[in-house]
Image 1: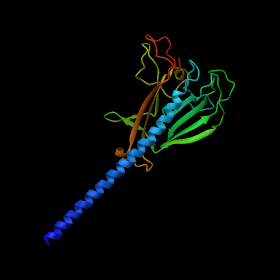
Image 2: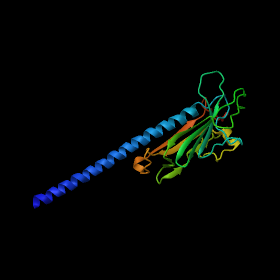
Image 3: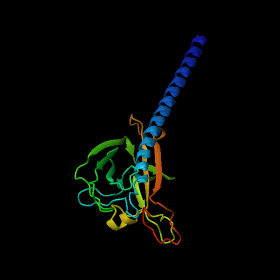
Image 4: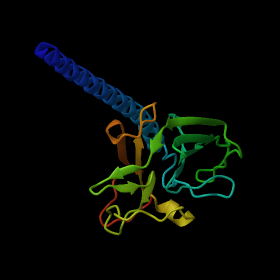
Length: 223
């Protein structure tokens, strides 16, 4: 009888350890999945921002023009183009974070426009999902919800201001937006919201061709 009881206890402990092991394995697997998916998405956005200074002193971050969306806390609207030609016509990239999805619409640039006077098609030529199961990033202690996109200008001392520009961006503020922060939390493809299976991403991109002199004389992006 004693041996039977001891055997049952051993089995219960073994099953409990197995259950814990399975849960931990699933947690690690899903966190790795979330990390890979989030890093890939962040790399896409980073590359587009790094390729946004198409012409000197032309601001790449865009406000609404009445025909296309404008940049705000959940939409990043930026002119960008890859290539090595002396003159490039940028496309307009609209990255949106809504309803747990991060998507991108690309409006093709119409060739022939002068630098800074480019126009874009009325409808997207390409639409894609960058990331599913995305949520707001929580940063700090206690955790504070971060906007998906925030925009910063230089102060008179040549340093980035610590207070972001108001959104949605006005035309004047868009011209002074020299830095963009990106913040989001990626879940695995299963969509499990468990914080232990979620990875937070937070990055800042400065849109400059050269360092800003101090005191700043040219505080604009792509200068």
